[in-house]
Length: 408
Image (cartoon, rainbow, N blue to C red; front, side, top):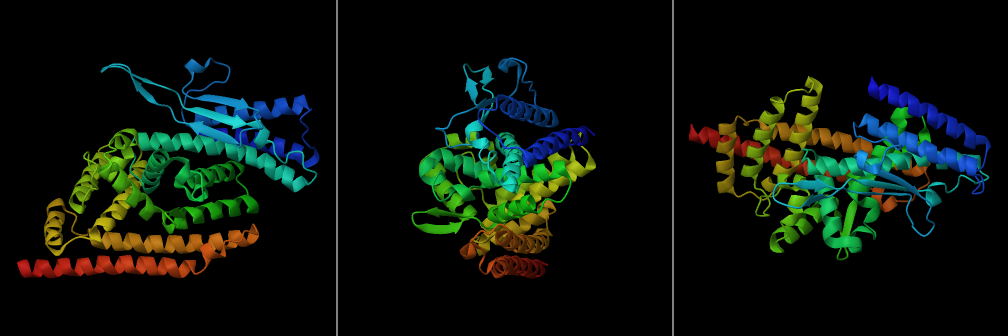
């Protein structure tokens, strides 16, 4: 009910401001409109904090809020908004003080095109103000999920990206990879989804923008040392090398979600460790109190999907002797059907990504974006990738069944 009421309140604010810019242009000299825009950002931000159960009131002193939000007007800064995560500061062995997350919105770039003579451009610029508000909030949510070590594919992607951003800096993050960075793509996609949820009515341009971001999330690649490869493969290769070989265990402490795939020594977890963790987590989720059946099912599904992906990476290189031992471990843990479950998951992913590929191609056409190299043969690449994955899993299932017959 709270979410519905907040959505309705924000929808009313959005429609009022959009209607205004359908007939008016913004001028830097118009202090009244500037004041209305600034107040709108404040109100929408405050409503979003209420929805997320985060303490914030723009009328109170910053130390009484759980997040700091400020609005600047700086033409020299090439940003629409930014988010800086709060940090844990340990002053002694018993006390940990936490700096608050800080979100900044820059009017100098947020208001771009509000003064355009083209009505469509003004209206889209207005909508993008709201979308930017959500975008920076999404970054704050990403940090919270990574710190709380929530089990999901998206949380793990964010943890990897936050780590790479810190370890490799602008050289890796700000160049050609920026548009494909999972933390940025997810923030763009989720912000667009939040806007559409609030408005609750068809908006083709915004929907196509969302479809494009979902496609980039699924099929984005990173470039490193002149090599272009799938996002996860590049991230895993780089982090494996840096965390273990360069002894950067501090990164695991800073981004705890990485412990899903790394040991405390910084080594990548093997199939045995992953399956034990998966079973343990499922029991913990099932015994959780104070959450609905639907929430439990969602947490279980997110956790399973993440572990399926991690386990598959290890199964690709498992030796025959280790596989025999792994097979026995599955029986001991009551996970004898895991290969069948993983095949079903891969089939679901193949169908999901095929639909996303189709939507992405249509979005590129509608938005007049030329990324033929990215979309060319996309459906075939999806079928080939998941065909290979299902083939390996079926082979392992057959080997497992054959071994069980021999043991009998």
